[in-house]
Amino acid sequence: MKNFIVKKFGGTSVASTEKIKIIAKRIAEDIKRGERPLIVLSAMSGYTDSLIQMADRVFPDYQGEAYDMLLSSGEQVSISLLSMALKKRNIPNKPLLAHQAGIQTSSFFSKACIESIRTEKIKSLFKKNIFPLIAGFQGVTKQNEITTLGRGGSDLTAVALSSALKIKTCEIYTDVRGVFTADPQLVPKARKQKHLSFSEMMEMSYLGSKVLQIRSVEMASKHGINLHVRHAFKKEEGTWITKKKENFMEGSLVSAVAHDLNTLVIKFNKTAEGVGFISELFTKLGKESVFVDIISQSGIGVPARLAFSITKTDLKKSLSVLKKLKLDKNISIIDGVAKISIIGVGMASYSGVAGRFFSVIKKTKARLYLVTTSEIKISAIIDKTSLKKTARALHKEFDL
Ligand code: ASP
Ligand code: MG
Image 1 (cartoon, rainbow, N blue to C red):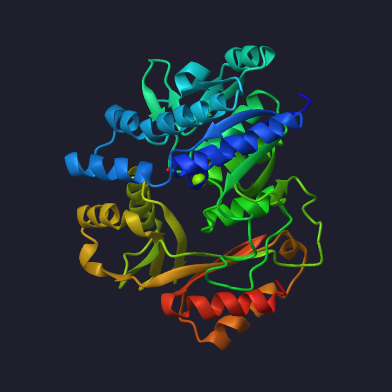
Image 2: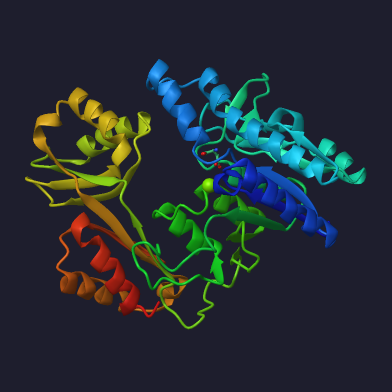
């Protein structure tokens, strides 16, 4: 569809009524230039967090329809205000909640999947030159219950709408100028990237970059939606994420250094023999939806060695599983760690990257706990105190 474009604004872009007015002005200018935007919004920044805090005060750990109904309310506020700001500028528009826009999901509360989108309503609005404003992050089940799509889920709403309406470009407006070669707060020399492939961006989201929700990148990749991550209050181009050729080198082997502080290691002091024990342990952890990341197992026979990393916020759930299996006396918890990773499609066709990675670790004297690699990344769990110098050294080693 010509000139059609999806524009998703994140929480920081609509953080105050003043900012909402600035965004309305920007959208009005884009429309004047001939663009026909479909707008998707997040809640005002901090809003969803404060709803979660309220829920926790009333019933900690509760999950279900009331929780999703509460959380979805943030986006209702932001689309209403933006709608008013646009109307004041005489831009015809219609704010739509997910159920009005026909965004149907599974009934897995707080992590629902989008199953289908009925696009007639949106199409008929466009035909009448009325611009639709969609509440991100929310959906509705076949049974008419309100659901939410997981934190950061308005990115997913935006990509799913792009795909359902066959709109090839989805702009993601945020408070950074694009996707950087590393977190600029950790590595001051980090640069904005012009272009990344879907698989690089997927790894980056998975490895700790907060810019895009990972499910939205997966969906964009599957449906060939080009993403453009850019600053909401600056006019410059940001970072394009597209299906660039996977061996396209752009001169560099590694395209980014990522890190994640939301991790810790559970190490077994001694373990039972055999695969039975491991299978029982990880099946039970999986049932409790504990996110297990790197697993290291070695030693045939006794004593075998086992350690794995989990998302820090899953510690409570993991300990209760270990307790049920009577394994809680047998473990050490290694906290104060961070995951550091290098990512790049160029790595797949070159050797020697691992050697250079470990030379850097040796130089910075970081304590190394766990390591994992894939075709396009190397990740290591190291002590948190060495994170900054290791990130900077890796950034330099790989000419970023
Ligand atoms: N407001 C939701 C959240 O904070 C969704 C989003 O921002 O994408 O997670
Ligand atoms: Mg977000």
